[in-house]
Length: 95
Length: 95
DNA sequence: ACAATATTTAGATAATTGTATAAATGTCTA
DNA sequence: TAGACATTTATACAATTATCTAAATATTGT
Image 1 (cartoon, rainbow over the protein chains, first blue to last red):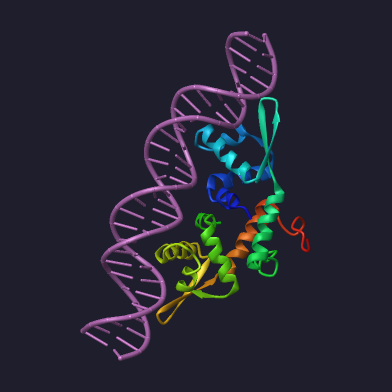
Image 2 (cartoon, rainbow over the protein chains, first blue to last red):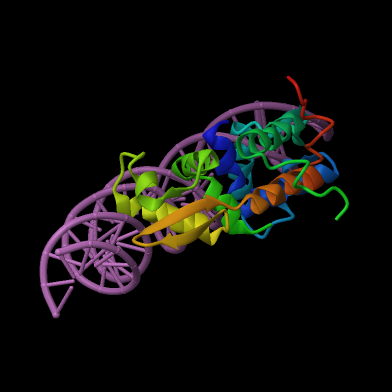
């Protein structure tokens, strides 16, 4: 489990970005306009998320589209379940 | 999902502490001697973990015994599963 | 009450990180 | 090729954090 992954998740802006991307893929600009900070700052956060492999990018003309890399989230869940036994038994499904 | 939780998990020393505590409950001193840093520094990390409610403590005479708060790990797993759909379907059980 | 042990808290410092502005890069269209 | 737009990179700075040493607090046994 890479250190960069947890560091990436430690910032609330970055977690918010990830949540935005669960709704749909978005360009860097679409993401940036959701936050009160400078575009360059959001770009920096996107770089951190990408370095942690939490998101992937694809260029679309002038735009760069970001999407979640769901595989890594599965690894995070597995990390907690295997290391800490925190899973299905404990995590109630419908509560 | 509390911010302090993710910040607490972001440090590798703290994650190592948590993993030590999965084996068995340990006193602050037993934990501290596993690391090459000063006892006071480990104590600081323990404070961060406790503030995030990832561990709980109980005094035993001169000692203070730390144990995992497994409930919170279940919440972390649930966070990822609900927010990011990263769970059972994707996380292979036997691979 | 005192000394010894276990742990935390206080205060200082160095490293890391989030944010800003300005410059650079990449793409499109005229 | 020039100009406009989208995004990133460079650089600087302020805030946060990890670590240290020293002092403080808590408990036990003499």
